[in-house]
Length: 362
Ligand SMILES: *Cc1c(COP(=O)(O)O)cnc(C)c1O
Image 1 (cartoon, rainbow, N blue to C red):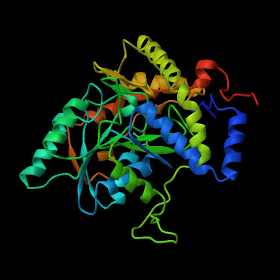
Image 2: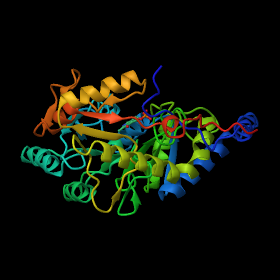
Image 3: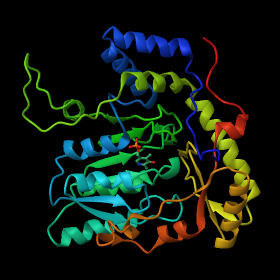
Image 4: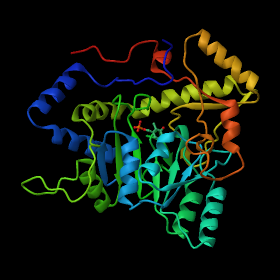
């Protein structure tokens, strides 16, 4: 097995605390553990409401539901993203409009977004939501994107799944839109080996999401359901594993940033990296390097195979996927050139420290 691209790092979690979480769960305190996680996470990202969920994908699905996205509605989504940003649009039988990237941050292009919105407008239509992704942790051009959405009165969902700790004007990304989602999947910077959450400053949305995530049970002394619900809640055990890692976020970002600086120095003549705009900080979750030729990229891939360290090609844009290739697309193939020449370089605590991170102490 090669060393994974970005494996989970459980430093900060020790056996005693893990056993306490199990015991407290036995004692029926699962909801208290979840509430503590939500409170700590809300403090960290400065959001009024946090709902712990099983994944960022379930968060995106509930975000669309909370905004009333249903059959036939149009939702704008970057084409350069992981498919999980787009799948929930289909769960709702809505229609994705795929927007290509600008070539600085590699995130949703304000120009193409505006083009798509104006095209709809000319037909008397309006998108029901815009999903903004901060790819590989690098903040998107929020000022421009949010201004367009505001002008056209379209709510924003931020897929900040991999961008915990990334900031825009000193504010955590994911807290700018009406709703933001984060992931604690196995490869994320903070990981429960699974898990996610949704943040919003709108209490009504938070209440709605919490209700739908827990099987839409009404607040009655008997089982009563007025809506179709989902089992999208987070396990309290995972919540505690995630919560215990939150204090180490700053150090983890420092490590990833140091490695990025090294990569940038080493590859400065043959690769370019995502531009980090002024007033933004990226958590440098993954370092995507766009090589000047496919030959250079192949060499890096061959070397990493030899050294048994995983690299991975960047996302293959959604508008090229067999499931989405008949959907509307706005752009000029920017993301296709990322896909043709870029890879994500490895980041692993195993590489940086050459040691397992799990604390051994009791
Ligand atoms: C990881 C990731 C997701 C999915 O997160 P899960 O918690 O695994 O559902 C969605 N969008 C982006 C951009 C991601 O990086």
